[in-house]
Image 1 (cartoon, rainbow, N blue to C red):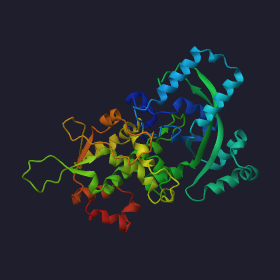
Image 2 (tube, helix red, strand yellow; image 1 turned 120 degrees about the vertical axis):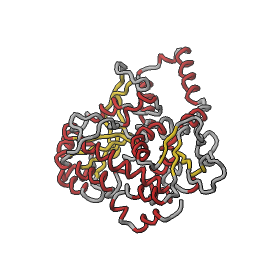
Image 3 (tube, one colour; image 1 turned 180 degrees about the horizontal axis):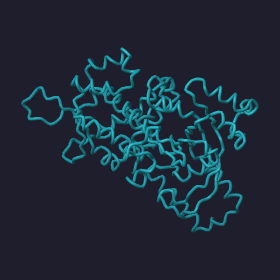
Length: 399
């Protein structure tokens, strides 16, 4: 079994306490409580993702909604409304739970049939009537179709919500609550192949973006290794090759060399290209069934830029050692301004000035017009993409 290399991040979600990134809606401790409701000993890799784990709403610091809400609640207590009966409090708790976004989980196991058999005993209500009737053999056969993932949506799972989630305190008290969870089951070998080969890039695509990876007692280190050495490498190379001329700015030169080819690349645009890989050709976007700002929210919501950078920092460093780019966070460098999010309706949140100042102080210097640079990036694509004639045109197509 290949092992994860020393020094790489094997748990993206741990970055909350390290870099101060905000926007964490469900801390790992709560996710772990949810995971404990499943046959945990048969799970070799698990992670949470989506709007139930990390906030996907671009924050406007000028919006006073939260502060007004807190002030209103404080005034209620001062006026004696904290004496509401238990029934009213229960109704309020239920309403709050309904407002919480669904948590998305991916669970990987060595034997899907065996896992479903155990989970049917523990959580039969998570399955629809037909799968419950026909059992684990039927479920595993259905799972083998397509991407090799079986989802149980709208599962109600018990969790203890920590009151100190924002502070990271391990001694914070918590209250038991019910959360809606959608979880997908995939077998280890299918996940590993998708990470290494981009067979369908279904789960691999989800792992391009920040995720909250559980600390598992039986963690499969090979999955972590393939994520870092293949999946993330493929993603950064593909995103850079797809970077258009509109994303490039001329670098500082002496002014007398018309052949200067150094370009400053907006790192945020690179992250947007990575986040957008999963949505290329997605009919939901064309049909208006998916939020048109989904990709930008994935990158620019509170804390997300820092998480993306934490995920891809090692990949940037590898490309820098190859001499393909220079990564700089110097204040003297060109500071990229936030991408225009388009028109907004009244009251819709946009990027806060404070977040944009910190997020765009980092830039890439890379010559994407250089054929040898593009060839090197092309060689870091999955082999199946290198064999695609339409992809190979990226070598000769000007950006």
